[in-house]
Image 1 (cartoon, rainbow, N blue to C red):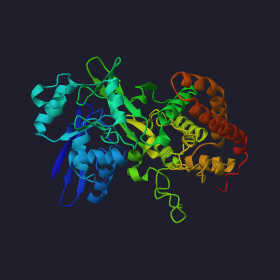
Image 2: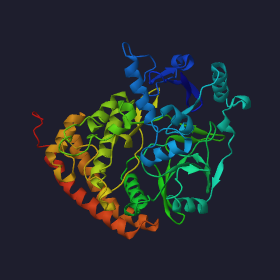
Image 3: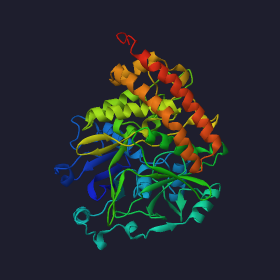
Image 4: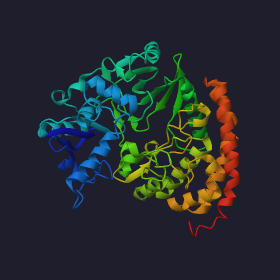
Amino acid sequence: MTRLEVWLDQDLVGWLSHDGAKNQFAFAYTPDWREGQRSYPISPRIPLVPVTGQTPESHSAEVRQFFENLLPEGEALDHAAQANGIAKSNLVGLMVALGKETTGALRVAVARDDTQARNQAIDQRNGRPREDLRHDHDHDEPRRVTREELSERIRRRAELPFSVWDGKVRLSIAGYQDKIAIYKQGDAWYLVEGPRLASTVILKPMPTRPQLAELPGNEYLCMQLAQRCGLEVAATHLVHVPEPVLFVTRFDRIEQEDRVRRLHLIDGCQALGLSASMKYERPYGDNPDVRNIRDGATYAKLFSLLGQSPQPARDRQALLRWAIFQVLIGNTDAHGKNVSFFCNVEGLRLAPGYDLVCVPALRDGGLSSTYAMAIGDAFTDAEVTPFEWASFAKECGLPLRMVSRELERLAVRVRDVMPRVAADAGSAGVSEKIIASVGSIVEENCRRHAAMATEILRVNTVNL
């Protein structure tokens, strides 16, 4: 039986164990965490008190899905497995290799003596990490990254994976795109790992595919547009080294005087108990044989989670505006892992938005033109009608008037602020080509959907 410690920032909260013979996983909370007055589960799917009657097999599936959602996907996962000499299906091995710096507050390490681990947790909460009890990786000094080195690493990605630095994988953030997480101090950038320091910024260079060369500028423009429209999103800025790199400030980090505090964050798939492979509503694709299988993440499922929010009305409006904005900018890749929630003693609270991209403006035939999650039964913009918006409202438990009002308001607001956002994006180094392309697509989408807003109220929802 292999066992790993699981920490939330500086609190030891439990143990992840794996029975190799049965290939079953289990998670058990520490007594101190389970009985604490300010304690909370790491996920609604893994409650503090075990579910009565839940089988070991069912519990194992929930645990595996939760922790697998912390891992990168695609080539980034391949590189992480190869660099550490383990199979990419080896969850325990990957957690040991990548678990020092994950999304949110979670840290994973090889389990030690329980008394030692408990003492370390107490000492860290008191601000006195004991030298003799620190994990080996806590001795690592911050590793400086210069602009010149970053530029070189971007150019050498064909021969050296971007996530591997100094022979170590420096990526434990879900997603396909190349990225690393750094600690930013003034104008200096560092690679860090350990309980005291944590990354505060995610760096996303232009992808290696020539067709996606404009992605950093596209995402920067869309993120700035969302912010100017009043949506709560991660702060971004564009840096040229000279290659364009999108800097995304982490909203799951709070920088304090002597350390960086981690905030617990889970994505939509973790909150719903879905694997990363189910992040799309049509998890098996759009082919006629499987397009009617819609077992993945959906807007209705995500809205259902807001019953666990301490401010359900606020989060319901925010999630609705997030969904509408994806349609207005043409972000067909807005899937279940692109929605996250702060998880704490109060429940689940919708986190700021991220990964906002106008996909049609990239002009890449390899990218899907269908929505990751449908508006009603519409998986393309051409299929969206007032009827589909009304269906969406009913499925998500939203009043028609609310959907109509927010659709019209946001469409008008996006059109109003777009010229100023475009001008500022040009000053930041976004190409005129991508500004014009995004602007044209957004203008047409806003015009079309604003015209639908009042028609939504005329839809008879009785038979929907």
